[in-house]
Length: 484
Image (cartoon, rainbow, N blue to C red; front, side, top):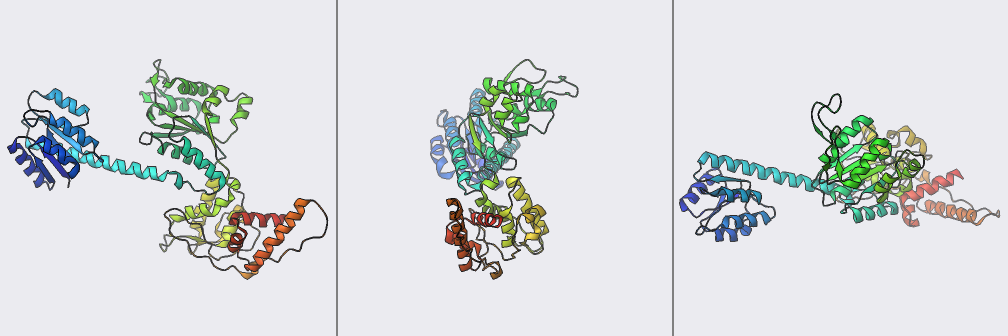
């Protein structure tokens, strides 16, 4: 039940409404003085305020109570009570944020219904605020996984430009997380409570894409049986994300340019432009410069979109992040057969770190999803991974559970185990032949790595720690050694 602050200078009115509220199970703070009610607002933090507009010898204290109530965090819902001939003041109160008003004399049933509606509205607002807070937390920068230098540079750029209104072009191969970055930009900006509208420009034919983006008037074309708002209008006040913008047809490129320049859209079949306040984020996995050169993309539009560019690295450019990403994808997966979380063997991790991931993070996530489905005992082994990933690994399988890096708010993963001594590599003997300096340095590096491997009995995690490199870097150097 709710906490309700009640203010009216008619004591009989206060008694009647307070009795009604208590009968409904609410906690009531009744006042016959407007000034006392005003001072008590902050102390009691009510969820609902019911106040007469004119208290204390016909002074409009009710408007002051409304104004202070709306300044609280969270603000309570306010119902104002008016006397005969004060409807104009009631309308003013509505403009200032009152939920509803009742004119004296009113029926008890009308009061009860208005209170119920006001509290339902208050619950909906609270739930909406909670969901938006959760959504914002989901897209905070620290929820985008990556500790590599390449990703840290991306995070710094995103944080720097998130709360601007600048148009941003997000570049990167397919599967690198361009939409995730776009959402982070939106939900960490002042537009976070307005719509975020994503659209894949390559997924719709030209005639449908135009209608989707800009809307249409009834009868504009066959099948246009009603007026339709476009996505730019739907995103008013918020952000629109144009994925694969390089595939946009030339006609629509000119219309998009007008939106960026004039901040207005014109629906198909309509001559009247509509102003929109929308931030545009665009993404592409193609080289727009090359498309400009071959004439398939407008140069002026390219410069309008490329105000700020954020380039996402491919996964093969940040292999050090693979163990972290694996831990992230496994964190919330539970084996439905036994209720346990999934673990991953060292052999499977070796295979993941050896693969070049042409599909980037999306391919890695899909590989982990498949492995969880194929796993027999909650421990992901090399054979549970997709065949293409397994093919990348040259070493024999190792079913010892691997340690995974910790993520924010994540429980510790299983402790490291000693590797199979059979995996121990023998030290490489340096050659005496003369040659380039880089070959000599490479031979010394290989010899030293093999020496540490021998000392750690083949434990790659301990070897990486001793060498002061990441596990993924060690795997890469071992793979280079096997290619020599």
